[in-house]
Amino acid sequence: MSTDWMIEEVSHQFDFYDDYLENQLGYQPLIDDLIARLGTQISVLDYGCGGGKVSRRLVARGIEQVTGVDISNVMIDKASTHADRGNSRYQQVTSGELPFDDASFNAAVCCYVFINNDEKAELLKIAKEAHRAIQSGGYFYILDTNPDSTGVKFSNFKNGDADVEYQDGDKRPVYLDLPDGNVFKIIDTHWDKQTYISVLREAGFESIDVVERIELEQLSGKHWAPFVLFRCKKS
Image (cartoon, rainbow, N blue to C red; front, top):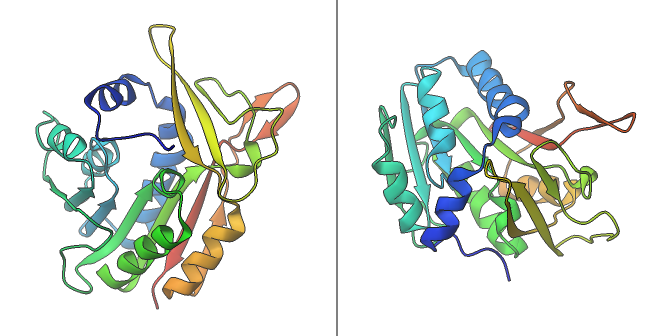
């Protein structure tokens, strides 16, 4: 069973987790790329915004309008009441369908959301709705843990067990190191890179780039990319 993000304690533990590595090698490079391509005077959809961590970072970098959506009312409440929410706004969605008109946004981001869905049909629904909601010439970014680094212990988390070979769609434990020394275990889904690409193509995206950060963590003499970014452009 995947992690239930509707539970208050789950939300609290996830917020307690220090996501500095995700920020350094994931969120900020994504935002850098977005701003370089579209500037800051844009409207961005944060699809699966959770407690608003990514939305707040977009706001902090000067993005003009940020809209976050999530299925968890607990997460939406947390995001909506955060002191640093700035110009961001939030709305709960009860299905994968978005309550917005076609071409409502210049771009959309989807961070650590695909791995929290265990059906390819749900991934396709998300991608299709993002494609519909983005304007022509806009971008859709998907940031997730890198399936190629499953089992590798990074400085603040480990994604999967080293002695298990995960197949596409398998459940996979993630161990998040909390500041108090405890470990917060969640369950996500292992998706191969090709699954992302095939889903995005079926959703209508034609230009798909796979980006892995150059500034990789070095462990035992090897370099690993903790995260992978899929950048798509709507024609």
